[in-house]
Structure formats: C-alpha cells, structure tokens
Image 1 (cartoon, rainbow, N blue to C red):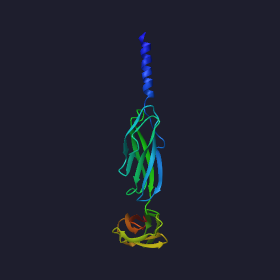
Image 2: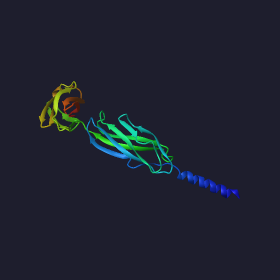
Image 3: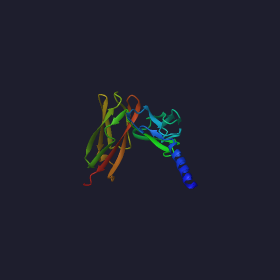
Image 4: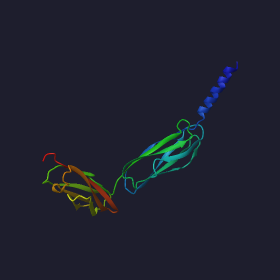
Length: 228
C-alpha cells in the first residue's frame, strides 16, 4: 500500500514548506508627526522584523509621493532578526493635513506588500483665523466691515508688506498690528458692486514677512439681498 505513504510524504512536505516561510512583521505601521513647520524635514524609523522561519528579503519601498524618501537599514533578515525602515518627509510645498504611505515589498508569501503610513499637519508661518469672509443680504447703501486675525506661528511679529486686491473697486483693506499678530479689516461698498450681478467672489492676497516672505489669500464672497 503505497498511497498512505505517499500521502504522508506530501503532507510532511507541505507542512515543512508552510513552516519554512518568511514573514514580515511591522511593529507599528502608523506614525503621527503632529504639527510641524512649513520648512521642516522630519524622519521616523519603523521597526521591521522577520517572524517566519526562512530568510526575509525586503526588495522595495514605494512611496506615494516625491516628498517621502526611504532607506532600508538591512535588506535581508534571518528568522528573528529586525531592521529599521527610515521615512523622511519634507514639509515644503505641502501645507495642511498630509497622510502619506509607503508600500513595503518583500518575499513574504502571505503578504508580499504591506503598508507603512504617517500623518503630519504642516503649519504656515502665519495662519488666518478664517480663509473665507462672506457678506450677505447686501443693499445699495450698505458699507460692511469684517475683520480677520492673522496669527504668528513662529513667535515673531507679522509685517504686512502689500495687499493685492482682485479687480474689485468695491473692496478695501486695512491692517493693524497687535503684538505679534495682525488684524486685517475688510470693507465692502455695496453701491460699487457690478450692476445686475446678484453675487460674486473676490480674492485678497496679503504679502507678509514673518520672518520669511509668504502670501496669505483671503476669499471674499458677497451676495445681494433678494428684496429691493
């Protein structure tokens, strides 16, 4: 009776193969950098281990964007060995909330591709309290005012060099400095609004120094009253 013997041999080979495979283990696949400056370059090292019973080879790291660079400390790991995968994020040109990921490619047969990810909130040197101001229910005689606070995130005072208005003679702007912060006063004269136009949107660009030159844009929305 050879069949039971053959079945036993096949089972033994399958068991040996299943037990002799590499397995990629990422200790903490997510990292939170938190709030960082607009020119910051931050780095984190993720721990990667071989939890299997055969050599593990990390062959490739694919980042989701050019702002992320990666480096493998050691590409091939014996069973039980660990290494570090280094991820560097450059904040320049990436304002606001950023969620990035890196695909880790290995010879792990169960999970040949695993993902590392990180999050960072890139702050600007100057942060406006709001990005958008709205003037509603305007009538011909209205002269409206709204103020927006610009906050210094560097601990240095803000200096407004210039304010550029879109082609909007109905808008005016003035600035006043209070400590390290600045208040931008926006004025709208309804009588100068384009005739026959019920609503519109304009942009004000504020050129600042704090300590580096930067530009903050405020969007101005306006809407006439539906009642004469």
